[in-house]
Image (cartoon, rainbow, N blue to C red; front, side, top):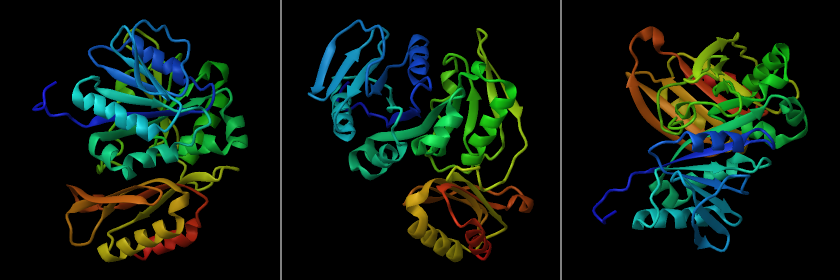
Length: 344
């Protein structure tokens, strides 16, 4: 790599999920079926991976092991940001060449601080494109985890894609209960049901979930990955339930809908909303119709970090419906909904 060679933004996927949800199984499947792409996997601990190559030193807290298929496993026991800085430096100098990075969190990790790191650290913001948060959910134990561990709620709430594992250990009635509960926590995330981590990488890599786009999916259902040679994908729909509560869960989805909005009023509403409740708002995204403007206004945020941009034009007047989805700990929905409606 020469100095004149431009270095593209490094796509980063955050892989999360409670203990035993199958993160290592998914990564092993990816590594065995990965072709023509060099990937760095950052893990907190090495699993039983067959390692056959050189050990490279970044720091005393970070070890990198290059595997036979060109992929790289990296353990980070210290400060993640510092280790990422050093990896980026090695990439820029050509000492390490890789195309993407996957961060596998520990099973008890809240993804919020890691996600925020990519938006508040100047170097990471310049060099890295956070692609998506992928959460694995253990169908056999998730209901127990949701009842007992707050972090399991946060992992689902932050997800852009959810991969449901161990569905062979539950019956259909239990599976539908699990999927409905997931949707009540986060009904914007697409759900994939898979067996032994067998899922096409196109379903969880290069999602571009953190780009400001004018797509806002709130359909309810899930995709089934059939473990054939081609890994066929089929969709099964479920009725969309616009409830703002999810049994005893204190993290859930809130859907706000209105017609055309006044730009100044919706700006004041969002500023007040983020100031009052931003610490509890895990993820939020809106596609808004603004009076006197033919383009969609896109809003997307994490806690108190929020971005606005204009998207594609509305095609017909009938489409001009403003929708805002917020995944948050308990919000006074009725009060906020009235405030939202008053911005029209």
